[in-house]
Length: 213
Picture 1 (cartoon, rainbow, N blue to C red):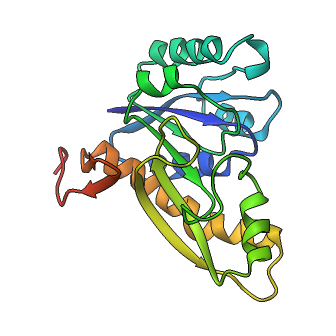
Picture 2 (picture 1 turned 180 degrees about the vertical axis):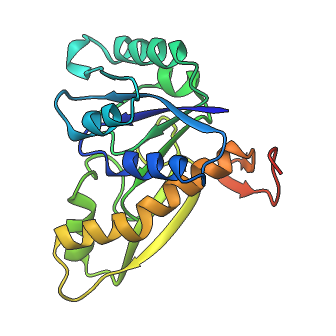
C-alpha cells in the first residue's frame, strides 16, 4: 500500500481528482493518509474531511525559519509514514532539508508545459495569463519530481491543451485542469506506485512493467 501525503493551499481540485481515482479503483493499493494545508479555511480541507482523511494546517508564517518549517513538515509526514508526497496546488516554499529527506518521493503538478511559464512567481492563474499574453497556441500541465529549485525537477508526464482564440485566463485555467492536470497527476501516482519511474539524471524513464504486474 502506497501511503500518500498531499500538500494543498486552496480549493483542492487536484486532491479531489486523486481521491476519485482511488475510489474508482484506478489507483490500486494507494491511500491518502494525510492532507496538509499551508492556509486555514481552504476548501481542500473540507474535501479531505468529507472522505475521512486526517488533515492539518502547517503554515510557513508560524515558523521563524524555512528550516523550522521543513522540520515541522518532515515530522508530520514521518508520523504518517508517507511514501509519496504530492504537491497539489501547494503555494508555500519548502527548503532543501524537506526535499532531501523525501528525495525522489515528492511530486508536483504545474499548470504549464515546463520549461515554459514556470519558476518563481508562476503559480495559480499567472501561468495562464502569461500564456495568453505571449500568444502561444498550446499550453498544458506537467507533473515532475521536486528538487531544490522551482519547477526544475525531472519531468514525469506532460499533457498539451489547445489555446482558443476566445480564452480568458479563467477559462484556460479550467480547461487545463480538466483536460490535463486531473488526468496526468493520478497517472503519475499510479506509475510511482507500480515502481515504473526510473530517474536518470534529469530524465525520467517509464518502465513497461512494475512491481505490481
